[in-house]
Image (cartoon, rainbow, N blue to C red):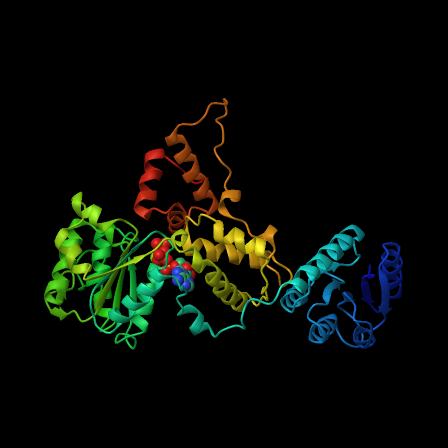
Length: 452
Ligand SMILES: Nc1ncnc2c1ncn2[C@@H]1O[C@H](COP(=O)(O)OP(=O)(O)OP(=O)(O)O)[C@@H](O)[C@H]1O
Ligand SMILES: [Mg+2]
């Protein structure tokens, strides 16, 4: 078998000698250089598998060595050694593609582990072809909706139809399926694109505040109304009002919204002037609206007004053929945002991603990849960094007395755990739990949960 070549670059004689002796004992074909320039020359000559370089050297820095090495051959792994705890150069080194960094004095056990992992990574990286195209511009990334399955093609068609007129659109789908993205693309690809896109979540505020957010108010309309305020309906102009979680809107406001849609005009709270309504409404929900209408929980007439054009955003598990394309898209997006370079995916990892349940749909996929990229050091999406949700949340905990908890107890504990994990940020908790914020509030009340 071919011996693994390691090059040590360090101006400090004793570090260089110690490492050389140690690595030779481990049967590596070991070389060394006492400055950056000689090191780079040697890299060209011997083509090592791994370079271990000090960061502070008199001629050129370890960061410059790293850059040069990666230009010579991207597959050469680089481990950087820092003399003190220098955050900035550590971050730069990792962003520039160093596999790891170690602090001086070098802990031999850590070095050994790091060498092993970097060489494994090199082998894996060598076998895989690069998978992810070069970064896109920010604007392009956020405006792209990915999919090639028949359901998604249908959605693209509907987006096209919707964007050519100001027709009202209802987008339905589970949490994280891309409802807001669809709304934004309808807005930005058609006649509304030069105008504002104004989003409001119908669960974010109590009823009276939501009303004044939407309609605006005149000075003196209520105690806190110290000046006139324009509402979202006015601010949207000829653009789009995105009403998220529409199913949670109170009956009272449903009636008022219906009037706006029918009359194309409205008044501010406490105001007399009639203001024309020119914007287009896109509403979204993760409830089954028809069902809510049948149960008398949502006004039928408003439902018909809103659903002139209805788009069903499919659950990710119903379009698994899109997963590979989405993974590629998100890695590109995440690499750009985080200045990382994770571009290769082992088949085993891809299969794992395609087979997963994805209860949190596209958002869960994106978050999972984000976490994996943050944890990955080389250019490979490593299996151990892809943490799927079923591994993260432990199954049922037994009660202290060993008995199995009731459903209510499980719910209570689970909600509590999620709240703790997001520091009681109700927005995040409601997203993770897949229910509205109002529901989270109610459960907190019911179970008497408290933040400590
Ligand atoms: N088809 C897709 N292509 C690319 N990115 C997508 C796609 N679908 C969703 N996303 C991305 O996934 C994330 C979640 O999407 P979005 O916020 O639109 O979901 P949602 O249905 O509104 O979720 P929620 O019900 O939780 O509000 C966003 O970052 C979005 O850009
Ligand atoms: Mg949303």
